[in-house]
Image (tube, rainbow, N blue to C red; front, side, top):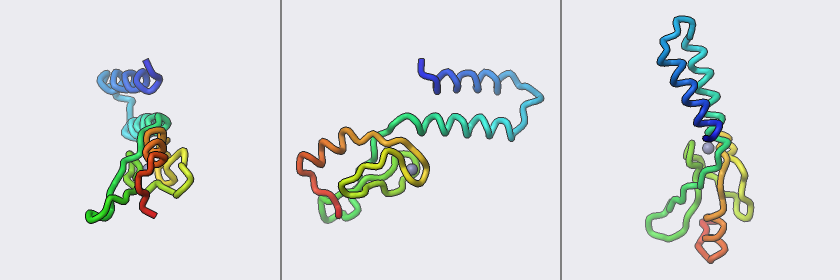
Length: 102
Ligand SMILES: [Zn+2]
């Protein structure tokens, strides 16, 4: 089991226990920790076609939706939210001659 999954289960058990000492601030802090751990797990970028009349494309962050691509450079993380990005498939596609929107 991955660390994030174990942590989520522990937090769920803690919340269900209806602990009177558990404040909303603490719950928010746990949620922030879960969000941070989830961003460490690389996700594939989402391909978008900004111009419906062409086959040119860009990539956006799968977490926040901000534009990711910098031609010739593949950022390891989204600059806006810190989501780790898995570029393996996208790189293959671009190497294969797909048309990049630049
Ligand atoms: Zn992002």
